Length: 197
Image 1 (tube, helix red, strand yellow):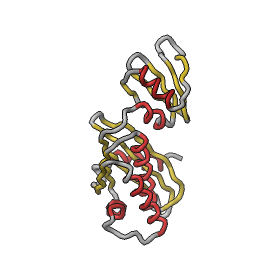
Image 2: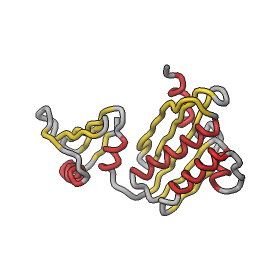
Image 3: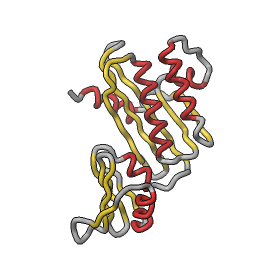
Image 4: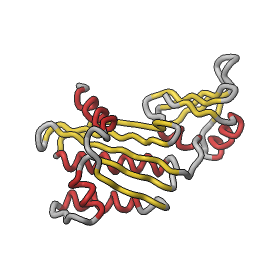
């Protein structure tokens, strides 16, 4: 549940400018509430709390754009192909800003890694970061996207193009391979999603 410390009047203006309808709060402590796509933002005196299953869209409207973020991604497949899931985390100097995971059906491990990378980059773009430092524990995907390895599989080649297009939206970016223990949060999220039935 994201908590954003901010000027709640300015936050309200930002939501209304984005076309989100804002209503009065339900209690004497709530200043206002706004809902969009499965999430609700509730404003108190000096903060906005976002509740619901999909807080990302509302949160991206309320956070200041720009700045630098570290983005971690991981895909997992049990069997190759088999049931698959993704996990991703966005971290700044303030700690974890956002994270997510989901099952993505039946696919290969490499395809799951690409889906995790693309979803993480989409989230970072929605939050408006200008600079991203992306890390994953799939050396193959990192080297394919950086252009160090060829991609013979047409489906993976398509995903590589999508990832590169997303990276080009940032003013500055890096993409590096890290050991699994450095990527443990994204790895854990992907595996938790797989464990859910």
